[in-house]
Length: 166
Image (cartoon, rainbow, N blue to C red; front, side, top):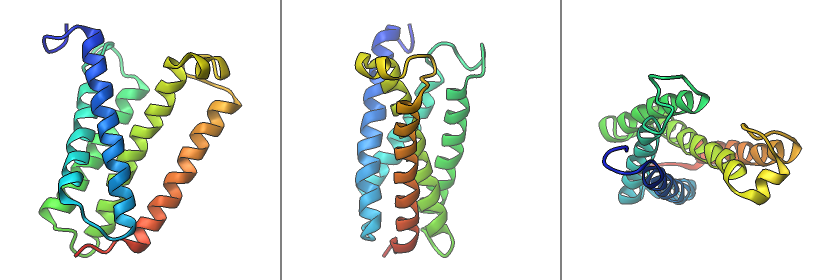
């Protein structure tokens, strides 16, 4: 049991939270390209991305039992999200805090998508057949992760150049 839920139910809640964070984050990212702030959706993105990382630590094996790559991604994501929240809410995106916010928020989104690709190859039988192993390996998996990386690199550069908050 985790927080009063079976492990399967908790993992399902974690996945739903993650998908909400990714969808909200993608909408916010495309909004940033047009210098649209979207404060409500941005708050949802940041909150659900924080929840995604935090709930990930509760899924066995726990961080106290063994440090996994997923734990390291979660720690890095939480640090980036803390910086993004400071840049947005405390520093009001003034001066260099605009690009600091954009970079840290979108890197956190990328990490969520990175984990989504890994989990998709682990949990979806058709993808598992294309890239077996834990962690997944092979050229198809590498191409999928490469596409995600290039997409986010292009988007982060685009947002860095165009995002001008009001």
